[in-house]
Length: 441
Image 1 (tube, rainbow, N blue to C red):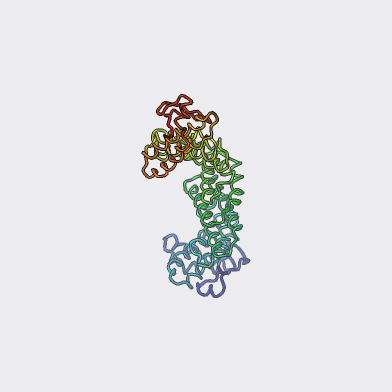
Image 2: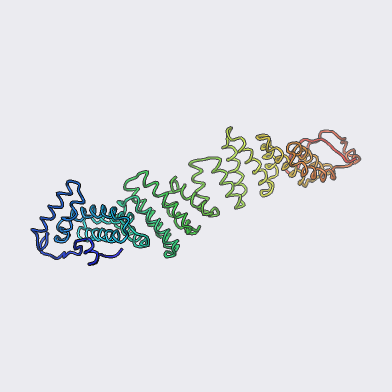
């Protein structure tokens, strides 16, 4: 916004550039100054800003800013009303807005005792009346207001400050580093406001500031770690901070960061749920820390309780798959698969297919029967899978045909006093299951 010039002064009908070095509080013509102050104030008391305008213009021309702070404040009211009146006239509106900003500057420089309120008010008017293309100037004014007012800043100012930072970044006039700096300034100001006077409004404002950072697209994992590490170290049990950390890291796909995992663990300690336990399972499984991954998945299953049976069944099936494919825990894998089928019959086909595949993969030590017996159990489960889910029939049948090739001959079974249909308990690699003897014809 441009400083008032003589052109603006003429357009407004008063001289805004006053002689502040004039003699006395009321200037060189103190009598005239006092007269017009009294005239316009009578109308102000009646609430008639339009009628007060001509006399106020005379007062602002004759009186220095030191004459009355109310002269500046009342002038702001008059100008705001005129700005709204001429909002469809961009040229006239620009002149009036510039004049309003000049009054703010007069108040800031003349009445330092009220500089906090003065800068906040200027910032609020900038937000309300700034024209397109003045984003940088508004951003600067808001930043200056926050630096001065600190915890007394109006709640909306840090939010709009971050909003303008985003706009400038999109316009290509602000760097990603500057946006991050703007975020830090806005958020720290919001925290000062909250400390001075907690409210739902400032809580919501902090969320808005964080959302604006995420929308900006500049929040890299490195930036987030740098931003949240001191907060986490200062108070690792702060629920609000942990929730925001988890949300922002998740939105930025920074799930591999150690800080994210630490935050999830802290939140899980305070608010244990199957969701948080499952997330920790995922995080530890991605880090190939099988023991902790399995422990958290087992906790997730337990936390489902009696009300989330189907969810627990899905977790069991996933746990079985992980134990088999990634953890080398075949016994746990079969146990989890069996539980998945038990909890939700809709999972039975996939669960039995998994159990059959696990048994069919076992390499067992012992005699000719002991090394082949696992295939009997594998076929048992695969037959159950085929019967439970027709969509798996082809896959299960293919595996059954493969495993049957390894059944012992009748003569081989006879050597161990075994006949078709006899009960046989298979024990191998921690797995144990009762089955029936079967031989090749």
